[in-house]
Image (cartoon, rainbow, N blue to C red; front, side, top):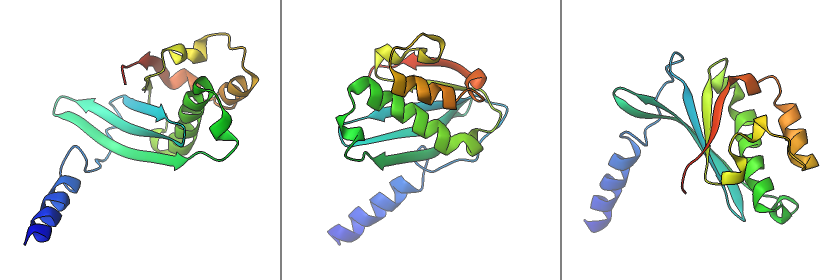
Length: 140
């Protein structure tokens, strides 16, 4: 009985908003919230509408042995690069905002960066950079 009740509660949480994934409204800008840790990176693609926040996509992965040696700036930048690359077909031609809890990455795509690895990722995103409205800091 207790396990069944827990299962039903879990099922309800997974199948109701905001966890239930919504179809995108291509007339509304997306927000991509990213984060990185010492073991993984990930992001949530969502849209803020008058009806509330709609979650469109979750994406995450484990860092490999080389990526785990990156400093925090590189891990957070990798999260942005990887999530945009993975969600590019989903975002399409829509404008979007990137949110990060790493303040040095605020509008990093508009700054001169002295990190070759991060500059390489920015270069690879050149065709989609005009769609980025802003890279904003959000307390994490």
